[in-house]
Image (cartoon, rainbow, N blue to C red):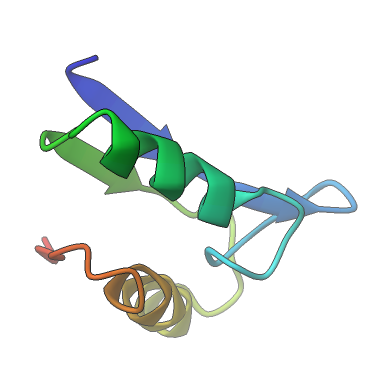
Length: 71
């Protein structure tokens, strides 16, 4: 895999990572197990407070030791 795209959602709404139904703990564990070291992108569609959503997602990924580049 060259590219991973993370989105989280609940009840038809896209949410910051860790606030919806996706099982990122398991996904990140598998990516680490297979020594994945390429890009993971994060996107929020129509989140009411985009900057806050990005901060929440950034913090969530940082808890897993994933380096984050904000652009």
